[in-house]
Length: 366
Image (cartoon, rainbow, N blue to C red; front, side, top):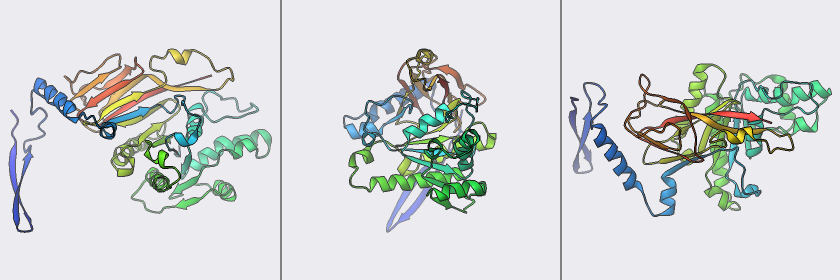
């Protein structure tokens, strides 16, 4: 039996006394205030109550992740949602092209695809060093001079406290007109400072009168380099997804972390229904080759996971996975964690009582 302490707080508002009732689990967390069957029924009633015939309201109750690696039906850049790319201070390693002696050096498959899908690109402090090493320095090593190909990878902004930015890298980008903004505030990570810049960029786009259609589209933020470094920095990146996902400008934004081998993003809790579309839902397309030009084929899946990093999640109901969850078992560390699951349908839906981290492998092939 779980004991609940009832506290009545009286709030004086003008000339009116308003009683406010708080339920406080004074003997520890109350994990199961309802039996499983009751909780499941309550959750499904909540889902039904949140349904609406109003198109705008329904859209706000659906959180979508559409893979940036899926081909678009439109070639018009203005009809696509605004997308920003943040490059963090993590080594850029091209696993699929380790031979530095080739004539045309390429960015790694995932980073190159994200770069091409973005209209605003930011290097977070030392991320500029990494981009420079992967483009300019590599081309100079091959050709003994700067090439047009290396000049095509210029970011729109470099920001952070700039304690990691190398002098010759700073000079290179400054001479080519790249804005470099130093933010000294040590209460924020460089990723936070880059996200502040994205927030300002989205505000500017929304205030521009000649692109009313774009401002209504769901924006996307790709954060590259969130994996493969120190574990505490990886957790800091995940925490940034939780924190910034609650801000007004990012509330309806698809924001995700990417590396060359994995990606991760937040699935918000009810009343939102989460829809996930990845490129390789069953893995078959990753093994077929229709790329006559020899370009990279990049996409997520099929291996995936649902991770309760934000705390215990009492209810999870999914469709489209090989091992679906039916809401009868909670996800929590020390208990069940849905790792090494597999996507088997083009659309995965997730309804959960608490926010979850969805992670998927990334496949890169020629």
